[in-house]
Each structure stands twice: as C-alpha cells, then as structure tokens.
Figure 1 (spheres, rainbow, N blue to C red):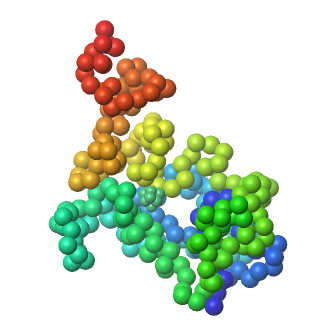
Figure 2 (cartoon, helix red, strand yellow):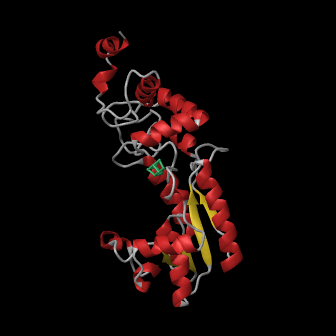
Figure 3 (cartoon, rainbow, N blue to C red):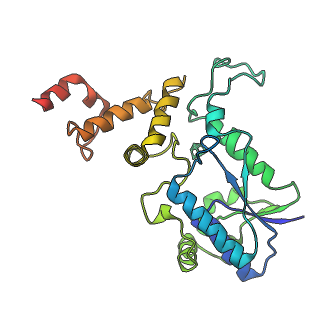
Length: 261
Ligand code: SF4
C-alpha cells in the first residue's frame, strides 16, 4: 500500500504537503491528473503551466518527490471528435461527434479527468485529498482509503492559503485573473472568455474552429463561441459597452444601427 497525494495545484491541495509534514504522515507519491487541449497544447494557460513547473521544482527540492503528471487516454480535441455510440448504448446522438461537453454528464470529466485519476492510485492505496476543515459539504468524498490531512490537522481554507504564500506555492489563479482549469472550458465566465480572446488569439481561433464543427452549442442556452466572438468584437468597436447589462438581443441590427448613427 502506498500513500499518495492527489495534487490539483490549488491552495488546499498544495497545503496538504504542510499538513502531512506537520503530522509526520508517510508520503510515497504525488500525482496530478493532467488534461491536454491537443497533443502539443496543454489545457492550462501559460501562467499556470509555469507555476506547475516551479511548484514541481520546489516539491522535489524539499520533499524529494517527483510529481507524476498522468494523462487520460485522449486529448480534449481527440475526445471532441470521437463518435458517440461506440459503447453500443442507444442515444439520439449516436453517429455524431461529441463536440462541446453538455452540462449534464460532461464527457470531458468522464473521458479525460476520471481515467487519469483512476490511473494514479490502486484500490488499496491510501489517497490524500485536499479538503479543508471548513468545507463540510465536501466531506462525503472522504472514505476509508481517501482522507484529508487538512481535516485531521484542523486547517481551514484561509490557513491553506497562508501556508502556500509562506512557502512560495500560491497559484496565480488566486492573485491574478489567470484561470484555473481548462482554457476552453464551457463553464468559464464571460470575463474569462473575453480575456482569452484578447490575450491568447491562437487558442481563441482553435475554439472557433471546434465551435464550427460541434453538434452541441457551447452554452446550453444555444449560444456559440461565434456568438461570444461577435459580442466581443462589437465591444471592441464601441457598439456594446462591456460594463452595461448585456442581453443577446443587443446584437440585433436595429439596436446597433441606432448606436452607429
Ligand atoms: S475544467 Fe471544464 S473542460 Fe476542463 S475537465 Fe473540467 S469541466 Fe471539463
């Protein structure tokens, strides 16, 4: 049996290292389930990629453990273009590609994240997961083989953040507008999408390409990445103001003509 820390690089997850050290618990391996956008492009934005590399160096130097980055069987792009219905389960979508994940039963979690996590630990291994003492709603994830060093040490989320700051292990997602999670995520906020389009044009272009091929709209209300692209372009032209209350009807030509003249 091995003692494995499942690392997400969030503050609670990293602070587990401090709590494990404090309590003198054993730690054999540290594993991270990694998602890739394509074969060559990570799902993390560059500031997060840099942070992970730096954190890995600090961890290796202080704890002597090399963080294992484990990938699922597919990249996001490969999963996006997989045909549905390969499992033989009847579905009205059979024969079509997956496209953007739907809100219910998000395939990205099932096909990219969970298989990578499953590869990380064997059935009898003892897994450490980063759930803070003041997150009781998440306690249901704990079991005989999954425990939280933070709960045992009595560390709250605020204490985890403080520990990360002191140990130079605080991710940029807490201090800048950098996004945690995949840059192409359908669950991200409008502000994050706007920043992605502005700062990472090659990634935005890839999202537009995928969007064109997807049988599922980016958002469940029927709006596509192309809709967001039009909205942001109109903001750039000064025809829509980013800080005003937005309604999709504002993209209708009548309202825009009014503003134009
Ligand atoms: S961050 Fe979004 S796209 Fe990435 S695995 Fe999670 S739900 Fe899917």
